[in-house]
Image 1 (cartoon, rainbow, N blue to C red):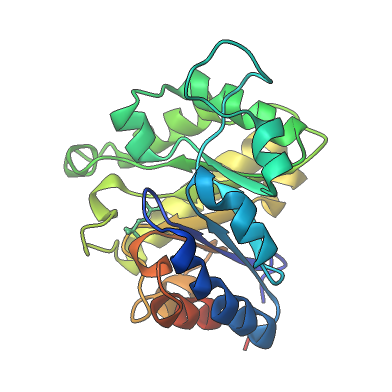
Image 2 (image 1 turned 90 degrees about the vertical axis):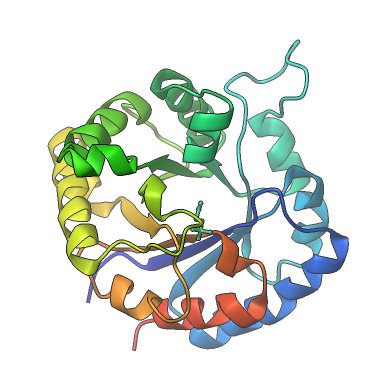
Length: 249
Ligand code: PGA
């Protein structure tokens, strides 16, 4: 069994409302019953505080943060702000933000540094586009994202890496176990080369069309320490089986 406890995080993206927080109760209960697995939900900013009151042991997180503490940055939200709302984790560098908001590796890294300094579980996302994979450049692309997006040293918080091939996100085209094993092995090697022993302890999540029917197969791949789940995290009915698949048997 891996020394790294599995972590399953739901990314609600721009979905959900107060009524949907009713899903948290059964998810938290399933997580407690399954045992041995860490489970989080990252709702939109507006729901973080309310989610915290219903978390029942779930780790509530944000989907982004700003690198600065405060200032003239209209529409942005700092680490201190999401923490005060109750977040214990944050996702940074999601491919949707890299595309829609044109976030660059240095920006993602600055956010990750701020989030770690704030003591958050900091999930840094990387992943290649379909064209990169077709050209055989997927490992080079991800390696360059890791070089540019990951911070160098940190004393607080916990760094987590999420490998999310862009072509698998929201498409139903889940990566094959062979694809996942190859990439997670390459990411592990890069983390150990960069951080030594610490690199062996960093959890590496897979994300991209994780569902109840493929989760067990993905979790069985070497160096897969859990999942970042989008669509299938929106309801307890779809998310609970994924949590259960991650629990140690
Ligand atoms: P998906 O999204 O599970 O809907 O593919 C994953 C993600 O973007 O984190």
